[in-house]
Length: 160
Ligand SMILES: CC(C)(COP(=O)(O)OP(=O)(O)OC[C@H]1O[C@@H](n2cnc3c(N)ncnc32)[C@H](O)[C@@H]1OP(=O)(O)O)[C@@H](O)C(=O)NCCC(=O)NCCS
Image (cartoon, rainbow, N blue to C red; front, side, top):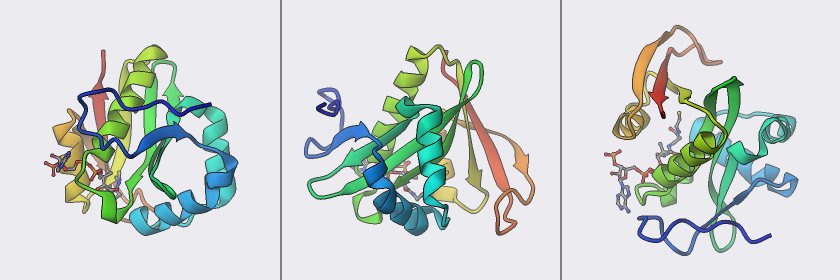
């Protein structure tokens, strides 16, 4: 099946395409997760997340390899949660992260979801600014949320 293309007029570069996660992608997705999020999750985690809601796991394929992905789940009857979002360093600031969030939000709306939540490290000022620009706001502090005990913020957006 041909992966869906980004809508015309979006800033998303045309040489990249959105696609679904496949089990063959686990190694490269784990590498991006290690490099961009500093987390070394087991392969089974990605397979489980994809199994919970396949539409919520979206990858961006460049010419040779995956360059970015978003993985989200349905966390309550009308709420989704972004578990991971990462764009490989060389491909940042080109609109790919925003395009992934836009496509994820579109799929949430199609599923009747009315709000999206996510967590971000307190020190990750760039990501907090990125999410603020997309309409997310900080709900509350998550003390010692991460495995290395760093605090996080819960961020939230109403998408009705
Ligand atoms: C956060 C992250 C996903 C953003 O992805 P990205 O592809 O760089 O995001 P975008 O390009 O859509 O937006 C980033 C900036 O580029 C700008 N931008 C968007 N499209 C652009 C384009 N075509 N050309 C130049 N700049 C552009 C945006 O205005 C935005 O600026 P901002 O600093 O005001 O927010 C990415 O930096 C990343 O993977 N970081 C490491 C992992 C991480 O922190 N993930 C989130 C954890 S919760």
